[in-house]
Image (tube, rainbow over all chains, first blue to last red; front, side, top):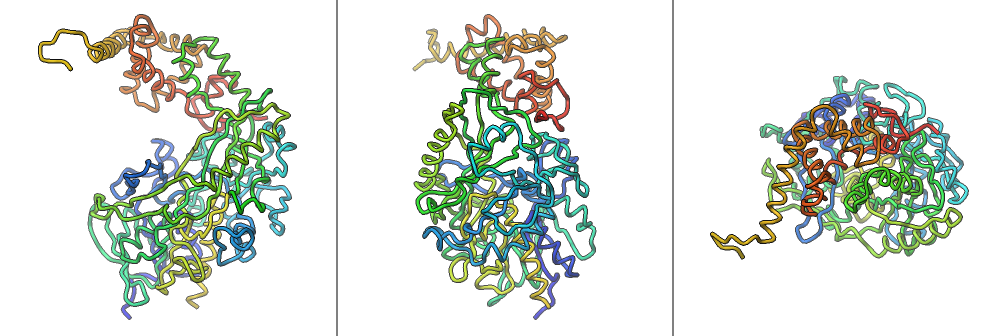
Length: 501
Length: 133
């Protein structure tokens, strides 16, 4: 066998790629990270309010299926990937999330258990300095969080008694400064934190001098076009630099650690599709609920964007018929710009307008929700006949967002919220999707027999190819995926270290 | 359907004329208002808030849009919220002009709080999105 250019090549530098690389470098392995985007410091991101540099290789390379409504997929090509723009909510999955089929007869089980992932969850929480607390019985054996919880905001105190079980929200917006990070001070602009408190993998890279480590090579501004294979092994990666120059990189092991769209696309471009590659795509249904109360909702105050969470819709036998849903108040409350516009157009101005806005803000309870759905084959990534600027097929996404399972979730939870918040005179005014497209899950799912990868995220057909990250999720939970992606990445890094011994 | 030389005033011509007139009026009016803080005083009156708050929020819009685009957006807003533009401007033009400026003035929680008078105007988004309870 020819000598490889590098021991391990990791494609992508977000949560998954950076944590796999960290484990390998710590163990003395040589790693090359291939990243489409470029390094951009947090200070520079704040200057121009953009997470990524505007270079050809960092341009979005997807399109919606023209027969369907457009869906706003949201990802970042840059060193740090989606850790640059995530909001910072970092819960674990429930035990039942790994056993959906066994417990409720729907969806899929994961080929590993919550118990197996638990030590890696612990490490991920430490790395991200997750703040949290409470004694949630749905997490029976968890250790204390690395950081104390963000204290309940006034709106949490209003709701906690009516929305039990109700706990502090697990989040990577620290209550105390840690490493190079400030404590969260309630800027409420978490996607680009003005004080750099919300975690990104650039914190870990900086604190541990990863990008200066001679064992780690970062090939930024470089597109991983395809992988080449020989029998049951990947031999090299075809690369295209932002300036168009082409090359190859041979590696002993290849880890695809991109988002769920691009991981599948690399396999498809490489002719390594199959029954499941690119299928089963999911983005959590993320929706805001505006409820009118007969009293003040006490919004606008608190120490962080969200601080408490209701777990009553997170698990139960109902998941046979409808999905789990997380519900948590959005501390900033109602954003008034749309209301001001509507009122101005309707002719209301001056003090009357201001009074109206004040009343709307005061009496509106704003609840954030994140919901699960069952895997659906028709939600998928394909290769488009259209090409990007590098001559590669664009990623065509077919994503019919709605389903009966989701609709039953909405109907049941919305009715129950009005019922249980009746003491506050609560009525749902409207619900609408927000921050869509940020989670790209399920396109190369893990299964012992079916799917694309095994429980170690190793490709079923190629012994030295790993397809890791959110794309490996067999089912989706209602929980935010980042902590689970990070725990799986740490576990994969350790696996690769032990596999080489 | 109009023909070459047709001098009838069609609905489309009226709309186009109205829109053009509004832009012209806005440009002339805004040029006068842009001196000093007369535009901010006007915005304060429309939104029912203080000049200091309107100054802060319009500054945020200017920062987001850049000076050149902001001036155009502000001119259109002025035109459709002052007489005679407020009466003559076609509805869609008026709605768009209002939406364009207000959306850029209030996009963050801190700006919401400033508009409501719950927080003093501040130039920084840092630590200003929520009031301490």
